[in-house]
Image (cartoon, rainbow, N blue to C red):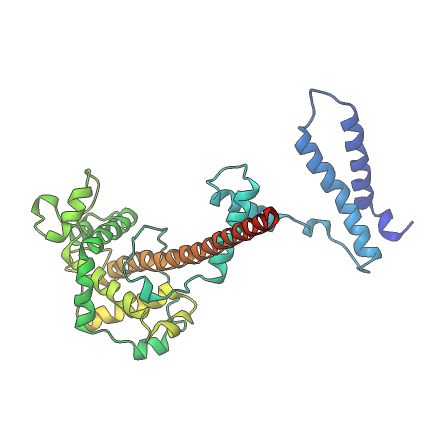
Length: 330
């Protein structure tokens, strides 16, 4: 007997595996595990001694730690498949393939976009994270060279109704976290006092729950949109995509531009939150929405090209088969 085969832990696994086999042969309907659970525990118990034997005999390991053999990465992967498959416990093979394709695209191309194609976006909302102070990575070049003109900001006015809607969401998201009555009057306005034509889109969609943002918040959104739009221009895009944390970088640039143009929130008196704090949070939410939609749009474009290519290959194959059939008939 080899040295590792006399180890109590190795012997226990062997004995436990044999006991599981005897338990299965009892064929009892009560006091037993389900077939799936019994198969899983039996498979794991038999695999562990076999793996230990392989590591010692073939790989010449000096020691083997069974507790380090875990399936956490595999379980995490299948958890992702379930989330992408509609949060169902059971997923089909097709859903696994589709989920794998989506995860690969997100891993390889987190923000590889061509801004010339995506200046007008159908915006949707994503998870908004708190802005962290890790904004100094890979931003020196852009901070030194980036500039925005009044014409860039004016060009963003075409999207003001949509930006007003997003501003209301950003203000609502922030107020939900800080729960400050004084800041509410800084970020939102009363519906009865609203005379801004850009809020007409909100009023048409409103069923009583939408928020009407303060003009200062809308102004910040307009500057933010203009900055993001220009960062995806041919002049800055390549340098921007080299950076690691795009959201923190754009947030830092936006706050600098707002400060240079003296854009601030007209604050009501609040002891807990100052203007800069609220601006950081508002800008972060808006940038998070814009960048996630650029990424989503590009991922959809890549997937569409792949599906079109597959469809074209099917059409080509059908034509070839029809040609062969006509040749045989002749």
